[in-house]
Amino acid sequence: MLYFSKFRIIVIFVISLFFIIIASSNFLKFENKLLDKRINLGLDLQGGSYLLLEIDNTPVIEQKLQNHSINIRNYFKNKDIRIKNLKLSEQRISFFVDEKFRKIVLDEFNNEESELNPYYPRFKSHQLDIIQENEFFIVNYSPQGIVKLKTSSQDQALEIVRRRIDEIGTNEPNILKRGNDRILVELPGLDDPMRIKSLLGKTANLTFRFVTDNNEDSFGTEKLKFEDSNEQAIVSKRIILSGDNLLDAQPRMNSETNETVVSFTLDRVGAKRFGKATSTGIGKQLAIILDGKIISAPVIRDTIASGSGQISGGFTFQSATDLALLLRSGALPAPLNIIEERTVGPDLGQDSINAGMVALIIGFILVIIFIFIKYRIFGLITNFTLIINLLLLVGILTIFEATLTLPGIAGIILTVGMAVDANVLIFERIKEELKSENNNLIAFDSGYTKSRTAILDANVTTLLAAIILFFMGSGPIKGFSLTLGIGIFTTLFSVYFIARLLTVLYVSKNKERKGLI
Image 1 (spheres, one colour):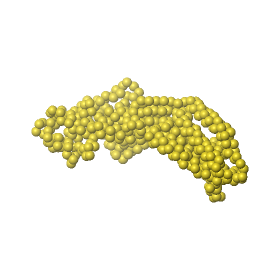
Image 2: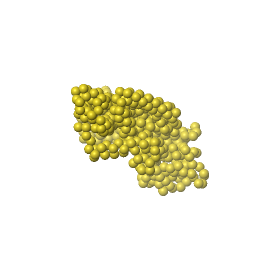
Image 3: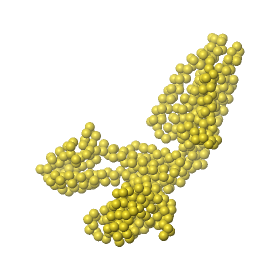
Image 4: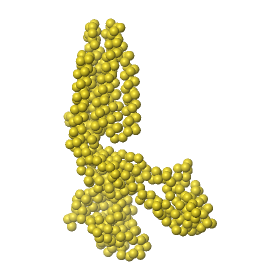
């Protein structure tokens, strides 16, 4: 029946007032933490940078296979099985085994209990394939193994990218997986992406190694260039320390030389190794190598047992800050390549906001005029309800501090259309009821009741589409589906509680009047 208890009226009023106040926090500043919330603007509205990164897994695959080739050699050496011509090329390990040992080798690779292959093909989900081609054995990653490795690299890279961006303090970054070897980075409000690109483009693989003139170093040697010059130095392949041993890194000013340096602190294992290396290497140069280039190569003057040190290299304060950030966040498991880049300026973002607001205002005004002409006083009730509906929608988005995009504005505009559609269905049904019913109260109650099924069917099917778009879509599509989905709930609330309450108040006072609608 067209009846609302006092309790029901109070609940409707409190809910509406609460969300209206929350919505107003986008325009007013409140001291209360609950009320001091805002809707965040997306990249297309606020401006900012869009980067699509692709992970180069080739070095990771080669490193994993290199480690596995060492395991293969050592494993068969312990079993007195000699293998020959063990080499790694084109992401495959190949080796020769005498004919009398070939069956034993093949059985070892396929043995569930064997320590040789930790990726035994249980449930056909193995990571390594072993193939016998003539006299040679070939070991390489299976398709399932490649997928697993890429997924693992992506998860690690995503965490490192998130750490690096969070260290910079970028507002509301959006960092998402794309496939199993790509990462999407959206940085609203950032219109100069050069520093971010520089930070994300570095693997930040840090090692400490001795400079040596002895080409017969038992660990092997290699020539590496200095980062700030074309000079080269021969360094040992033996790694004294790696970035994994770092606990912290910070930019500092050296009071003695008045130059900017990066001070670092080592964990217990790293401090022990560093102390031992500096005690036995006094007078030697210790090369500090980042991503294959020598940053600096200071001469060790004394034992450093404190577990802390400094990296110097003619840094500016900004470059020292960035290097410290890279070291703190950790090394990427694989290099990242930028394959797509877009920058949206704040002016273009403001133009999008203006265009969206103009479209919303024009559409809203046209709807208000049409509804008022068509339904008179009930048109005014509908128009008032539409305004409340929009405030409810904005209030809910504000509570969750959602990110509003241009497609999200389109979802809000569509919400207005859905709300008007529901009211039109109700009023047209009431007109049909008044043709056969003289009692206004009964006619209006029947109109609301009998139109409910059609309204619910329309809104539920739209809600299902919004849910599918939200889970299957990405980026702007999610923004559209989110505002549309929330708008459906606010529409049903405003139509069946707010608009119906106002209609009850008016019809109750004019129940004897003819031609109400």
